[in-house]
Length: 296
Image 1: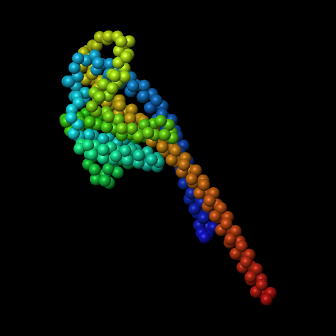
Image 2: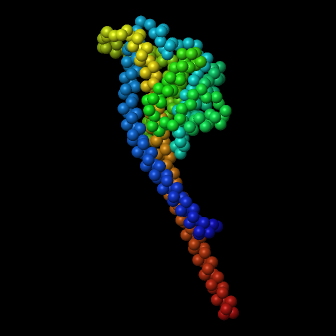
Image 3: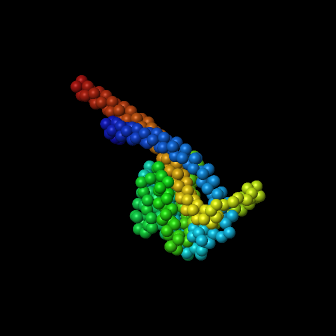
C-alpha cells in the first residue's frame, strides 16, 4: 500500500490538473459561444448564395466558358481534411482522419488517385507521420478562421482543377449540431455543376413564382464572377462549422476530464484515510508491544 505522503502528492497533482481542465472548459465555452454566433450568421448567407448561383445558372444560355462548372471523367480526387491545430478535444480530430482514410480506401478501390490537402496542425502531423505527400497545408486558424483563409484554400483548389490535376474535390469536416454532437460530413465542392443541378431540381416548382429577370451584365459574366465566390463561401462555411465543433468537443472533453478528476480525488482520499488508519493502528500495536515488554 502507498504511504500517506505519496497519496497526498497524487491528490495535489490531480487537484491541480482539475483546475487546468476546468479553466480550459470555461475558455472553450466562451469561444464556442462566439463560434456559434458566427456559424449561425453564415448559414443563411451561404444558402442564399447557392440560390443566387442556381438562378443565374438557369438563366445562362451556356456555362461552357466557366471552368469550375465543367464536369469531366474523374481520375483524380482531392480530399481536403479540416482538422484542429490543438488536441485535447476528444474525438474531434480522430473522427475526421478516420473518415478521410476511409474515403481514400473507397476512392482507390474505384481505381481513382487521391491528392491530399489538409488544414490544421493535427492533420498535418498525422499525414506527415504516415509519409503522405501533401498538395496543400494550412495551419494556425482552426479555432478562429478568417475569410482570407478560405480564399487561400479555394485558390489552391481552383488552380488544381483548372489545370486538370484534379477532377473532383471533397471536403471532410465536422458539422456543428450542438456542443455534444458533431457530425462528420463529406461535401463535394468541385465540380460545382452537380450541386447546382440538384438545387435546380428542388426549386423547379418555384421558377414560375420568381418571374423573369433582366441581367446586367449577361448571366454568363455574372456566373464567372460568382462561382469563385461561391466556392470560397462554401469553404468558409465548412471552416466555421469545424471551428464551432472543435470548441464544443473540447468543452465536453474538459468537462469529462474535470469530472473524472473529482472521482479520482475521492478515491485517493479514501485510500489516504485507510493508509492513515493503518499507520495509527500500527503505532498503537507498537506502543502496546513495548509496554508489554517493559512490564514483562
